Length: 207
Image (cartoon, rainbow, N blue to C red; front, side):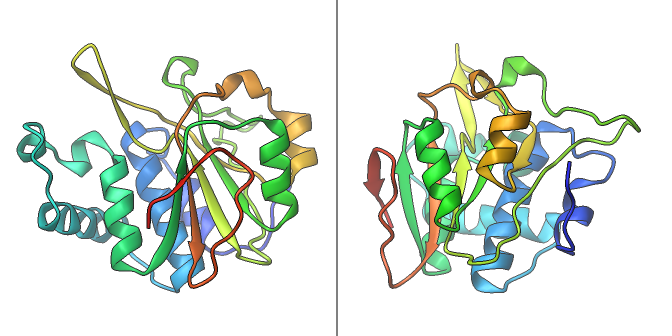
């Protein structure tokens, strides 16, 4: 997989522990802030920030008081709070396909994919490192996150693991099978305000 000179990604992704499910959303969120707002957090600082925002905007869900982002990962409410706090636009949808992904990449977006839980996380390259292709962030127009949070399945929390940033549509088409990323999955698109980007997916602008 090609590497770039992006100095942010290696310390976030190429280290022991990145295979843990609860690291993925944390790392994605930190890159969103670094690239779109110039704000940089450590993993622990970011988790604490998310929980502070989460507790300030708590819903009436009976699960809220038991929820801990460091243990259970990140849910959509965290992303909404984060976008509002840092004045980022946020689009939420639940449908995607190869054509939509290619349009987003071609127009300067960066795609993050969380492999389905049952697929078992990241690929490894020949020397045993977890392979994480990622974008150049040349235009920094918007940032797409696929399936970014926790899921309740049969009253159990399941977190999707394995974060992958794609460098180009051709790389995506060459190195990944889209069946690894089912169509009906939640996607989030962050973008810089005030401009509202036309996202080539079905969904709604929530922030």
